Figure: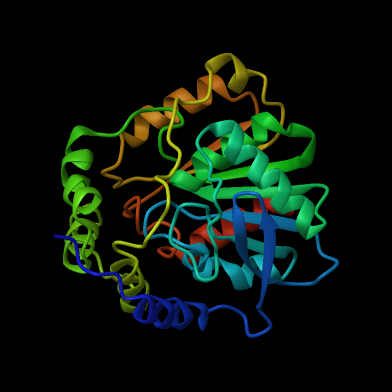
Length: 286
């Protein structure tokens, strides 16, 4: 059987990672028909907004801790916990997202609730999949789009990745979450607080499975007329990095593709922070 979810332990682990964020960080909640959404905000209140979406499963908005301070120098950072995924204060409702259209409607409502008319948008992994779909849904609302090793956008999962992920999906436990991350990251040194949060998020109770679905249509991607930065993990075991890069270059008319060396899919947001910070700063502040 799966381990019993320890909510108190999860909150302690979440707050320990959030302690790595800028001191002026504040929490904002936004009510939506899909439940209350929890947002971590920092940076100048009058700065241009940048909205950050984490990966799925045990990932949360806390995972952006290594980039938050740099981004907050020039932007109002708005890091969002996803519906039907682990989160600090997200509350479920009777209605939950079932389709891509539900997710884009949810993000519409979150931006409306935050008073954001237009923003830069970024996402990692599953969050990148949502961000890309949202940019196609509301291109007039997104100025620039950046994707960190996005999943299921340009290529499918490797069979070995799905095989290793299956035990965590079927019977989540802290031990299985750690074993999976250690396999995918190749035994790289991981932030112990971040790793503890991933373990604590195993078995997070949810009323619904996260929405998954098709890749964005090629014709839609060819018509996406906005700057896109694609930061890919060279050592990703999630998909074929160079296949993703090749397909993205063919499909996206204004894409810049960068392969970040010696880093895996799950470690990308918090690994090589100086290199990622430089690429993001150059992209967001042209």
